[in-house]
Every structure is written in C-alpha cells, then in structure tokens.
Image 1 (cartoon, rainbow, N blue to C red):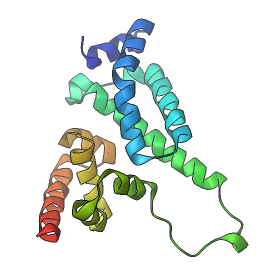
Image 2 (image 1 turned 90 degrees about the vertical axis):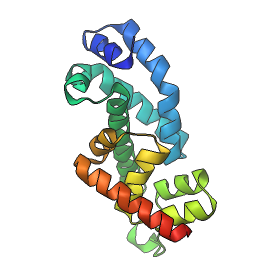
Image 3 (image 1 turned 180 degrees about the vertical axis):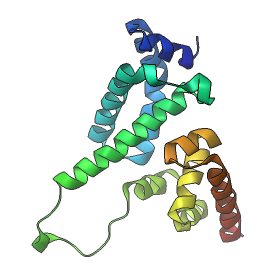
Image 4 (image 1 turned 135 degrees about the vertical axis):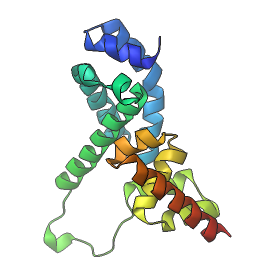
Amino acid sequence: MDEEHLVRLVAKGDRIAFEELYRRTSPWLAVRLRRRCADEQIVAEVMQETYLAVWRAAGAFAGASADGTAVGWLWTIAARRLVDAFRRRAHQTRLPDAMTVEAVAPAAEDEALAETVGGDIGDALRRLAPELRHVLQSMVLDGLSVRETAVLLGLPEGTVKTRARRARIAMREMLA
C-alpha cells in the first residue's frame, strides 16, 4: 500500500492508516526539517502541526488528479508550518529598539546549509541568488521533483525548470 492510498484512507478517518503513514514518513520528514532548522523544539512543533493538518485535511489531498505525491503534499504542509514557526518565533523574540543590533545574522536556512554542504560547493551555493538557491536546495538536497518544488515554492513548473538551469550554470561558473 503506497502513501497516496494511506492518505485516502486517512481521509475516511482510518486511524491505522494514519499510524502507518506516520511510521513511514515521520523519520524522513524530521530529517528534512532538521536540514532547515537546528532547533529541535521547533522541529517537534512543526511535526505535530503537520500531522494534525494531515489528519484534518487528508480529504483535500489531490495527488491523483494533480500527479503529485503524498510525500510531496506532506512536505508542502511541513514547509509552510516551518515558515509559520519561524515567523512566530521572530515575533516572540523581538528585542526593544534600544537593544537591536545592526549586524545581520545569517538566515536559519543558510546556517543549516553551511552545516550540510561545506567547502567550495557550499560557498558557491550560498553565493547564488536566493530564488536560485531555494530551487536548487529543494530539487538537489531535498530530492523533490520539479512538480513538488513548484508546489512548495508556489511557482509555475516552467519557472522552476528555468531557475534550476540558471542555478546549475551559475554553480558551474563559480566552481570552474
């Protein structure tokens, strides 16, 4: 039984199918979230929110009609929840104006990328324009298809393909 079928069963309220879906996908999802966020508390919150959303919205899964995959749909939910968690955390930890620091801290994704990919390749990735880097990260590091990347980033598939090509060309030039 594949994940798409499990999601359809979850949509009908099948708790055993939900448990099986969780068992199959949670280790993979946790690893992907940790690549983007080193804070275990945030990862745990996002995992919980993601599977709660899956339970509640499994009926909305349109994988068969959109040629998407259940794991791509799951990752889209998780990625959005992670962005929401970063926003909540940013609002909660704002410093008073007198205490703000002018130096710009690296983004959480850049820090995770630095830990994941080092050396010349990591340096080249970090120098890419953000829109190119996000596409390359999703497709290469996260292993998403063009369609899944398009869904995750909210872009047309043609734009994803173009950005992936531009990113690869830029990487070749930087590494030459």
